Length: 231
Ligand code: DGL
Image (tube, rainbow, N blue to C red; front, side):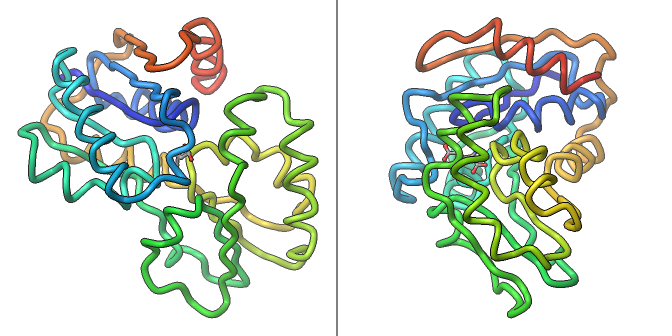
């Protein structure tokens, strides 16, 4: 089984790493759609076309199943794409319902438009340029911290934070510094567990990995990030 994974940049590598850990596939093809970053500021209509193009490209490269490593693409385009392609398509959907106590959910502005009912105990933040900033500077975090700290400071008593954009998982160290008491949640592991439960066979321990870029080729950087996630 070859699994295609798609995101606007590095965010979906968190999902790819989780899929590899759960041995979902024998091979993976990852589409980094840098030409269209940030997804989080695009309309639902634009995202549907972007998603369909991406899935078709992944299928051409041999993908038998596709996983959106991106909350924005999933909320805006998952149902649309599922009706138009044959292979199964899985999405990374934000789960505000997992926040029990005083919670904070961060997601892109577009994802916020599609959020299901959020409890009054949960605050929603949509830091517009955060995904782009993380995509640019990771593994460094200085600019991310400078941007994020003042936004998070008012939530010092928050108990749980849901990272509703796959890029934000690369800023966990910043969240931990600014909100040391908060438990951090994201959807990558749950999604990989679901994919592994649904797909018929267990994948390889040493799968093949192909990277595709619509923007600048960043193969070396991506492989480096992936190998640190797999440690
Ligand atoms: N990583 C994506 C997500 O999970 C979106 C980042 C972007 O805005 O391109 O929502």
